[in-house]
Length: 294
Image 1 (cartoon, rainbow, N blue to C red):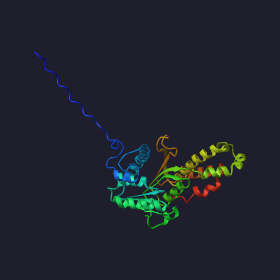
Image 2 (image 1 turned 90 degrees about the horizontal axis):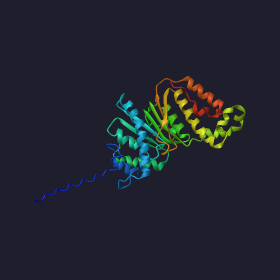
Image 3 (image 1 turned 180 degrees about the vertical axis):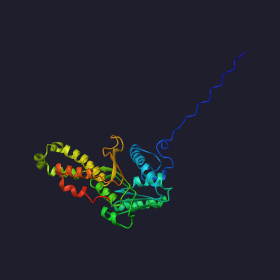
Image 4 (image 1 turned 60 degrees about the vertical axis):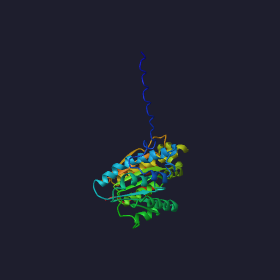
C-alpha cells in the first residue's frame, strides 16, 4: 500500500517593511516632506534626508512638552522661529502638533526675501493658515505690529554667530515663556579674546586657555554659551543645556532650553560681569547686559 504523500507546507509570505513607516510620525504629511525636499518626489528617503529628519524630530521631542505646557494653561499659543531659513522646524511643528489647534500660530522670522516668499507659498499650498512669515530684522521684529506683544515660545535652530543673541534679545523683549536655542558658528567672543590676547597674558593665567588659535576658537565658542546661560538666568529663566543629537550627526550640537520662572538671579548677573572682566571682554557688556526683568 502506498503511503499518502505529505503535502508541502504553504510557502510563507514574504513580508516587506515600509522604510517610511519606520521613520515618519503618525499623521505626518508626506506631501510636506516632499515640498521640504526631505523626501524625494517619488517618496524615497536618502541617507542625508534621514539624518536631517532625525535632527528635526529629535528637536521636536524637546519642544513638544513646552507646547503642552503652554496649551495646558491657555487656549492659544504663539511660537516665533528666528532665523527660520526654509522653516523646516516651523512646518514640521505645525504639521505634527498644531494644525489641529485653532488657537495656535507660528511665525517664521527671516531676512532673505526668497526664503520668506517660498515659505509663504508653501503654507498657502498646504492650507497651513496659521503660519506667517516675516521679512524683518531683529530690531523690527521686536516692534512690528505684525507680531503680538508677547510670544510664548521662541526658537532659533542653528542661528549663526550673533543671530542667537538676537533671538535672545527678541525673546526677552517678548517675555517668552520658553526659549529653545541651537547656537552655531560662534565667532564674536573668540574675536574679542584674540583682539586682547597680549593684554590678557599679563592680566590672568587663565589666558592660557585661549593662547593657541584652535583653543581660542573652541574656548570662545564654549564661553559664548556659558555667558548666554548666565544672561538668561539673570532675567529669571531656568536653563538646561544638553546635546541635540549624537556628535556623529552634527558638531553644532549644543541645545539650550530656558523656561521663564520670573525669578531674576542677581548672582548670575554678577558672575557674568566678573567673567567678562576677568577674561578682558568688557567690550561685550552691551551684548550680554540689558535691563533687568521685573
